[in-house]
Length: 113
Image 1: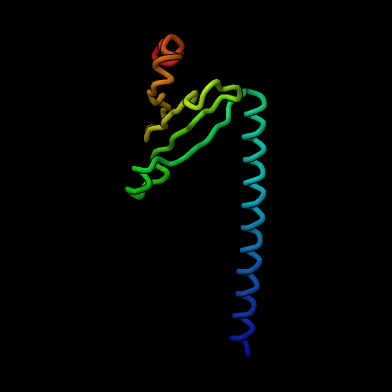
Image 2: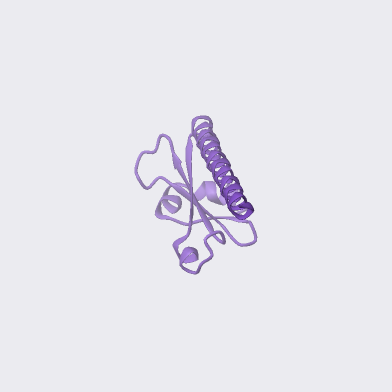
C-alpha cells in the first residue's frame, strides 16, 4: 500500500510542477510581449530575434542569434536593420542593400568607428 501511495504522491508533485512551469511560461511570454510592445511604442522599432538556420542545423541554436529591427514607419519592406551577435557577445551589423544604399553615412559614423 505504501508503494501506491508513494507513486500517487510523486504523480501529484509532478502535476503541480507542470502547472507551475506552465504558469511561469505564460507570465514570461506576457512580460516579453509587453516589453517588445513598449520598445516598439517608445523607439519605433519592432525587434525580432531568431536563431540562424545554420546554427540550428548544427545543433547550436543558442550559439548565433539574428536580431531584426523593423521601423514603425518604414517606407518599404526592405527597410530593416539586422544585427548578428557573435559567439563573443559582440553585435555586428549585417550588410544589406538597404543599409548600403540608404544608411552608409550613418553606419560609417556610428557603427564603424
